Image (tube, rainbow, N blue to C red; front, side, top):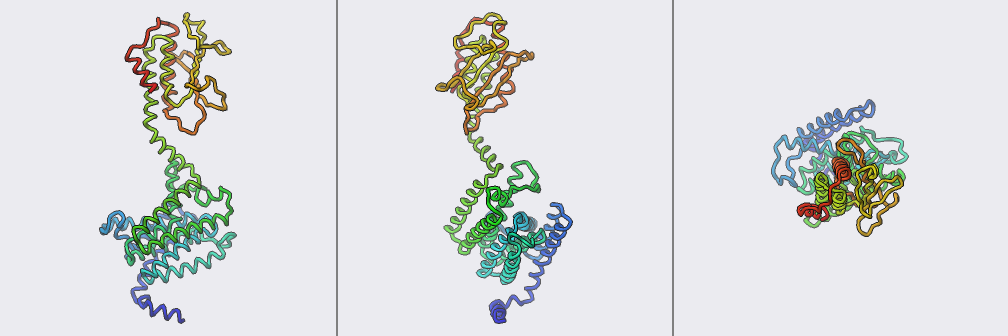
Length: 462
């Protein structure tokens, strides 16, 4: 009784007539979200139906005065038009409500994360008010602590959608109410940072599914807690570890109670570094592929050079006069790209063709086919399957006549292939086959390359 009396003397406005309407503004839509969760637990509800009901509840908050009226980080102190404010309010409520629902994948995880966020909201309310937030957050924290006693692994009771959606909605509403009484940086940054783990989980899930071309509503087992389980941690270890992460977000958010340029920069630096290292450690395939594409973009100039060398070779093969010139074109085309060697096998045997003189470095395989092998300087002309991978291109002329095989090889390397492989598998084999068929079946006296042809070869090699 003494505590209640002190509380009443300190905050007499908590018993004023204005207290009850604000409480009802929060609790009526919160009850609607709770009933939605009960229905979802019992019958199952589709995502669009759930978003529609949550959107109605968020609109009720807006109509009751709990709304986003400006976003100082983007628009400064400019007051937003009502329809923009309504949209931002609905998006905020939907994001936080479903973030806590999404992270509810292990016993005690969602409730524990909500406890840290609730305590941050309580501490902020102690410094900046309003009193209603103090009362509701301490009551919610007490309820969560009592619930966690039986919800921690091995759990005997569970949140379900009714619990996780209700807690998420209530915290989003209290954050909206707190923004009306707090300084700008406190109102905006602290709720976002304190809800860090659920927001991070939601953001990663949406990005992963968009990158992989799946619906954002598709269920999977690649959430943060699932990835940690895959790394060999036990159920309890994962929950305790993520409690630590939530506590870290909570502590960082409290640094912003006394906002300065240095404190904000420190918080952002620690958050960015921690999130980057954590995502790297989890080993998401989608983000690894995104990094590879980014690296591919940086390597694009070299890809252009290598692709142009193949295109020039296709153009020159159409006017090649003899077999020697065909070989020079091939060497120039592959001399500067990422392939380390090639082997040209002619078929049928040249003995069945009009007599043609071959160079000393041509040889024959076990089947009597003439072979021409080339490797980059310093590399052997033959490579085992354990040291190199290869692509065999069957050479068919425009009329469909077989002319041989061109096998390109590359030593195993972690560096991406800097060439469009489609250029090698589409028009290039036909251009080479036509050139070989023309020069071997109807040989012409060797004529040196014209001056302009030589420049093309040099451009390929460079």
